Length: 69
Image (cartoon, rainbow, N blue to C red; front, top):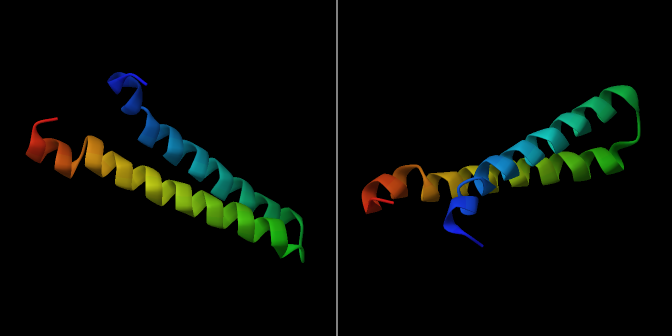
């Protein structure tokens, strides 16, 4: 994997996570009373958002400025 490709990974993770979370909310509004898939999609979306944000902070955010990367 090239180093330039790694810079797009956090944004991709956050985009996919936001999409999953948004779809989970949309399904929750449409399908009343079927929470199984909604919790899985929403939880996975939030985990991917958090992980993508953490990777972003380490690659381009706070740690990137300190280390000069």
